[in-house]
Image (cartoon, rainbow, N blue to C red; front, side):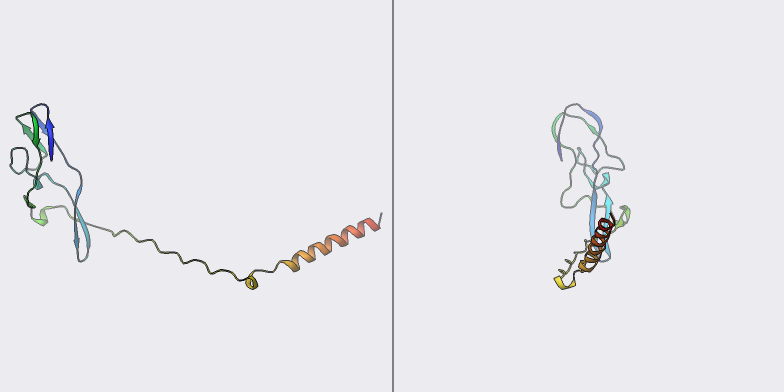
Length: 126
């Protein structure tokens, strides 16, 4: 990673992210550590992201080359993550055939019949 350094001195450049490793029993992630990078002087960083910049201008501030530097796998804080659940494909509902649709006509006819009978009976009594 390159950057333009505008003033010399001690600075902290911290990366955030994760290493991802797919193993037979699942997917594991580990946070990036400073020990995984070479600093501005070309030396491997220690336990902190702090570096002492002695010059200004364009500089390579963090680097890795050919997978180096390396750390033993047990020194990284690996943790297993859950696999993203794939959404279940919804099955389309089977179309309802006309013959299977509920038949409301008898109910409607009964209500209309009672309504007409009440109306006619009420008007005859006047």
